[in-house]
Amino acid sequence: MPFPDMFYRWRPHPWHGLSAGDDAPDIVNAYIEITPFDPVKYETDKKTGYLMVDRPQRASSLQPSLYGFIPRTYCGKRVASLMGGDLKGDKDPLDICVLSERPITRSDILLHARVIGGLPMIDGGEADDKIIAVLATDNVWGEARDLEDVPQVLIERLDHYFKTYKMLPGKECEVEIGEHYGREHAHKVIQASMADYTERFGE
Picture 1 (cartoon, helix red, strand yellow):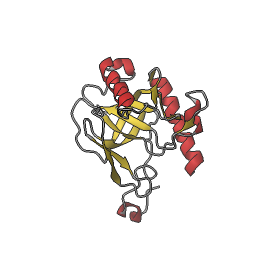
Picture 2: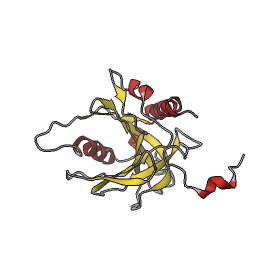
Picture 3: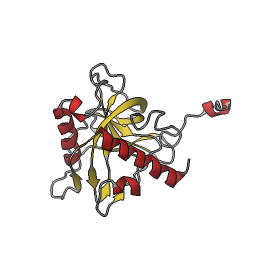
């Protein structure tokens, strides 16, 4: 059933008003907040849905890929349980890093991403998985189906960025990243985050 005309007068909230995608968890919608090598961290305001400046990056590490989140996902108890141990989810939408051969320099955009794996990240004692995907229509990486289908150095760069972007002189870094996982486990994480979202916010 189509939405009434009134629905299209307002832009939907990127977290709650969009979907994870009809083909999730294989191909998902990704809302992009940060473009590669931007020295400023942007974050979606949870109340309004507007993209806001969070902070300039203090460290020299720069995000090596497109970065954002999958709509209608939530890192709660199901996501945390996949990591094992006594963890909680970080109560944010599930983060996603999207690889693209051509530079995409605009944020605040939506794209279709094919999921190929992820990084099991713990930040301050909370589960904060980083899903890794490729732009589904990419002419170079679009046929990738798992982590081994892209150069390992691309995954190493993501791993290194998340291990170092919060490092500050004189302070202990609270970020840990375990063994990278492939497509099959990434699908489980996405499905868990969608179930966590439904429990937290409803259908």
